[in-house]
Length: 397
Ligand SMILES: Cc1ncc(COP(=O)(O)O)c(C=O)c1O
Image (cartoon, rainbow, N blue to C red; front, side, top):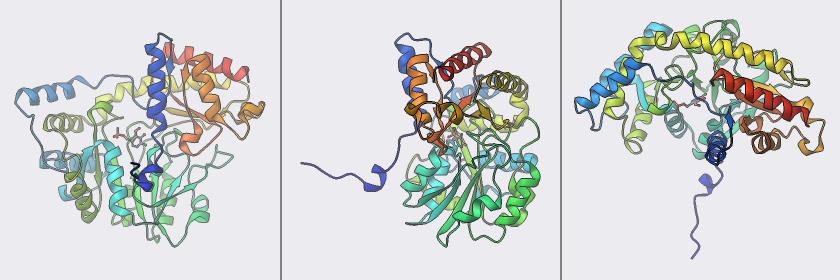
């Protein structure tokens, strides 16, 4: 008997970054010396005081359910963080904490989107946004990455051609994964002014907030307070505190949105574990100081990677100033071979993994074919060896 599955969910693509990471691990298990540049996580450990807070909570028996959407002490700690870092004033009722920013973003899509609503997603985008929108019955409308990607990040002129009466929301990510850029203040302000008279939800993914190297990342909500009734700030502890495995994310926004996202959590994951909440409160109390020393290390790796990439003929990039990614333009190299026609970086990344044992996520995963995403949050020796192999693979095209 053949029973049918959900048509909507059948359209979803599995996360390409998770898939590539799994394949890289399989090859490593077979004994190959794989260099994995595909992972979106810092390579340093969670700071000790945060780990200790979790251990202490476990020793105190905090092993039960906590409150849906986060306990009041956790939500208060998030309010304090937003006040201190971003000069934004929120009440605990406007905050929802969840199982990673990913769960928050997924639930936000379910909470905001009706069948056929369009969501503007500027490319290159984080892999899950489009699938969240599809799962919610909406239509992702991708704003293409401009061909000359070096100057433009996201301007009103780039957005305007994709606006329709069905536009319901826009997702803005700065600092950006995968492009590694932080939108400078003047540009962000201009974008905020453009959005002022647009009847859209603004979903602002600020998860790489602490990872901006050349100037601090600013929240658009801080620059443009008029947007606050439509602005949904999403952040999390995964990146800035090296806490990917702890799964803590949160949103701050209008109370009716927070209420819906919290309701969804009561019907899905229920809550964060209580002992994880204690660790999260500790992390938030430490602020960016928790990992500040690591930012210097990442900056040095970024500079080394840029230097090594610049030695590779045909390779181009927007100089990155945020997150821990370089989005490498290999279109000139791919154009040399019919195997990689139409900027087929997907085929090149498969070859790179199979023949050279280097895992890099292809641009297709982020809506921008012809690119490779390098995550440079890896040890120096790995970075040097992996980029040497990348250079060889590009030379062989
Ligand atoms: C831009 C962006 N947003 C959200 C997330 C989700 O982070 P988490 O679910 O670990 O909080 C990631 C993780 O890679 C990301 O890169």
